[in-house]
Length: 170
Image 1: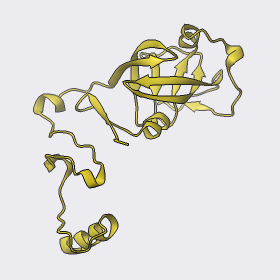
Image 2 (image 1 turned 60 degrees about the vertical axis):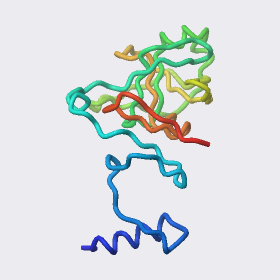
Image 3 (image 1 turned 45 degrees about the vertical axis):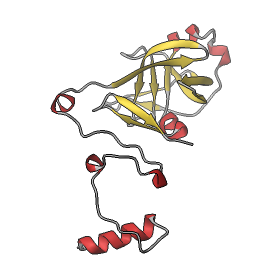
Image 4 (image 1 turned 30 degrees about the horizontal axis):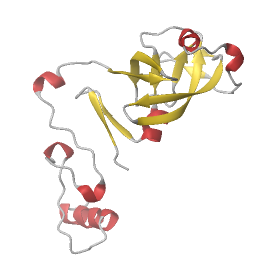
């Protein structure tokens, strides 16, 4: 097992250009400020009431110029999902969908064949990105699901505990 000093040396070699830089292991909830050199995203330590809820992270944002509520941000999902009923809301039909070979598995392991895929513009604040959605025939408790494809593509850090997210600075 590595000692703390060996871990600090590995940390320094991996992340710092200057080997004389004093480093120590700091847990994220102990950091009180953003370190500009790393372009970090930092959340405050969770308060007890934050820890007591099990709420999903739901947003309201713009898709194809339409305001959409109940947008679920899910870091556990690899893809973005849009229901067929929401597709109609954007003035699109199944004729606008492209074929694909993706098979979706739900939490119970049941598979389903989606209708197709489509590219739509998603905007939150000043951040806009063309995003690929897999269109499904079923209706869920959310209008749209944004998974890791969108999260990583936009560079957002979501927190269900804090019920907010932060964007990386360019």
